[in-house]
Image: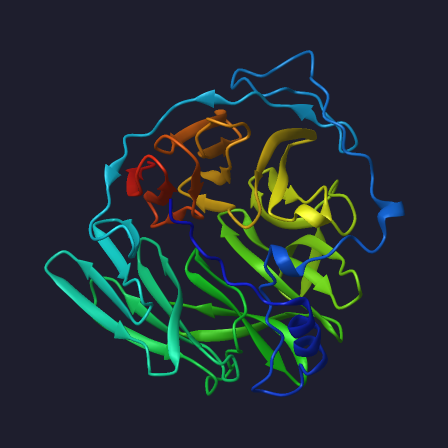
Length: 384
């Protein structure tokens, strides 16, 4: 079984990057991976998170009770989606939706944006690699990162069906940085920038191509894991203390507001719902690949069970995350949470030991890649 390799930024490199945030070519890498996020710095302030079942439930099957200290346990149903093989080779990275497909080759040197009767290509330079692709109903974004991580990343924004494209890079009005987090949705693109020495969030209106400066992190702090949903934008802030303290927060212009009920310093990532949120928490900092997922719907706090850090995604009207096998012989699963329909397993990997990538959303389609002893596969399903 092959296993996907996630990019790992060592903790020492992260600290150095935060220290040098005033230098344009040495920005803080705002995407620390599980290997670089140590234990919480203020465990004494962390509320006890003990799951307890609720005696009542609404028509969706979700418990109606549950507090931040004692969230109600949600039992997952099983509603597998109608999965189909994604186009191209399994070792390429495919994101599909709305009749469009973005395909990145195994080497990460070329991306093809293809759709009805047209297509375009994006090629990485000799010292670049394609680090990320984003797709929704109107736009595709291909992000290229410097292999030596000393120059700002660049992003090619393609307007689907219009043959229009433009580039965001270190020379833009709000310049990009090396690495950093990217998120696409609701007509705008979020990325990291630097303004007067501060590490900040920039929002690009994709219709007007106008960039707006948002929240700026305090000195020697940063952020990662940006997510956009119809309910708003969210990200995770972190500091450079040893160990680092992480806070999942809503992003509202030039301000952030921590998600209520999340234990201090242990959050990993989160996204907003119309009347609530979904987030992950790392209970054991020495096992940061393993998370517990939670949700708040109205005033009710819910325990969604175990999952894999860094796999939270929004697609159509639901939150998705990966759950690694919990026992020998179990498949890896893609979980879906919706405030109206509850929690369901919507995909299970082929037999044997397995690993799933982060789900990729293309507006109306979700795609996931499974590396499993029973056979690797890359599949897509409609989620509308």
